[in-house]
Length: 382
Image (cartoon, rainbow, N blue to C red; front, side, top):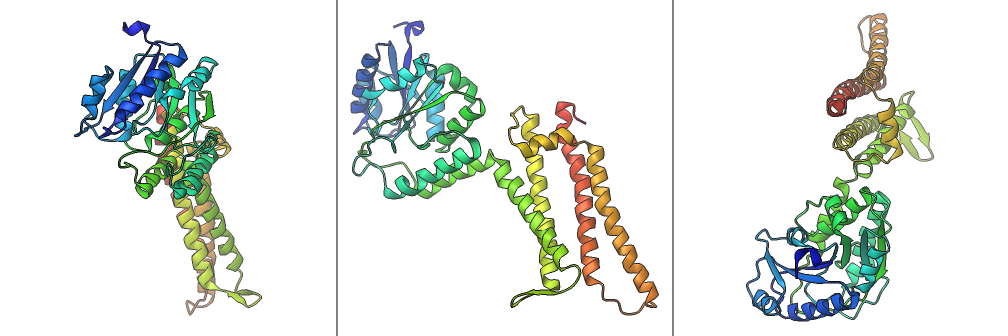
């Protein structure tokens, strides 16, 4: 079959799956026949030491090899080798039935760019998915993905997916490990690809699982946080800063009580620390967002959009200098009181702490403005 005649490519990564590889290939052949399209099956050997490759070769499918271990690395190699307009991906452990790929292809034919299977909306057979994954891990990752990126996907860990070759090129996938699954959905959403979802059946696997619950879960979570500085930095930083300033100002006039609780200078120290810590986190979030902006990523959240609309280096300097000026005036006030007291004992710890906090916040704002302007040089925003 000539390369130009191939319409559908099924890509399966393989690492020691001799028990199941033949079944997966047989089902994939039936699945291609059901679609009515010309197709190919690509097995990506990721370093198998059993008879997996021999079995696959005996069944006449294409074998490509990826020396770099990893779920994402194997798939990237397979996708780059795929010759079809449509690409189906799925594990070679027989947990997914490749004989049932026609609904995926139909979705792509009807205009979808990226189709994700949902095991949670289909049937999960006994022993196929641990309860921890089914009722906690997968729903949690789905919740965070939809909160951060508005993907609308219910089962982001499902390994059976389909997309067009054009969509694959747009997603610009980079991850080499299990977080690759999240990266696909995130990048599809960021590229405004049309995402669809269909229920599928999920079967118990044969052989040893390659999944590591907590390690792989952490890899998914950290990847999502990398791609969402708003939730990682901006929102927590803003909340901590405002909380710190509120506590600082609340205790500035003097100690007070709420019921049995007494608030004094120690809470003011806490407020100062929170304000400084929060402003640091907020600054890092702004740096990350500005870097993403200069790299060509669309800025969607209102917070950073407004910031980029009104920010200039000069405004940042003015803002920082206003804090510095207020801090200096407060210190000057303390100096005058000390002079009037004949340079004797002076109890102005509250005012001094308030002034110190303002001075540090102001200096940080000035230098952060310079750094943000350096980041924005690439976009001609200096």
